[in-house]
Image (cartoon, rainbow, N blue to C red; front, top):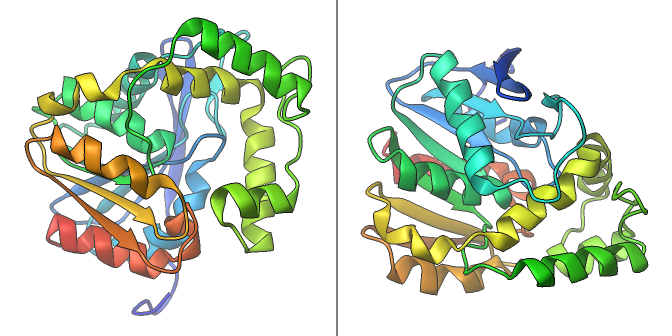
Length: 274
């Protein structure tokens, strides 16, 4: 990474939470603590390039969300893993780490969970950055059930809702991805999340984010990759916020923290004032 003489070394561990444990990676120093949350079917490691840059300015904590990466839950996942549950696990883990006031940045579902944290813990979340997150209205449960059956019928998941490998052409078409290494990592991280992907996706689908955005006191930046499709969610969401703005990261897929880590890090640091 530019500006670094050698790679930063990070600590990692697990934290007990209700129903299992949450895995984290942390490092860096500074007055601010920034919590990084990954995309649906992702893992904390996808932030590693951005972490190397940001950790020169602040303390960084990257979490594996419920059922993802190295975070493990007891028993089988429910049909719907609610956003409230995922947010509570995040805040519980941060309690254990002794982090009282934090900024949150999240990709995809990570930004959605971050919005819930900011709305329900306004005294603790100082800033929120979403990176390609769809903050929209909720979907009926019956629609979610039909979509689950369709996903199995179309071969995206097996009968037990384990994710099937995605064709590169699909990832390029849906997410504007072009880097084979990032595609391979997505396959690996989705395999690690396994049967938790669909319940978490249904939690996003069920939740009406538009009903909570006015409760967020912290300043919000909705960033997104210019090549992806998530910029279309920014206008309606920001209109409901007290202090929100958006910014496109040029030349990037839906996952700029992987495609354009330096540009993403600079965007974050500018917003956070570090």
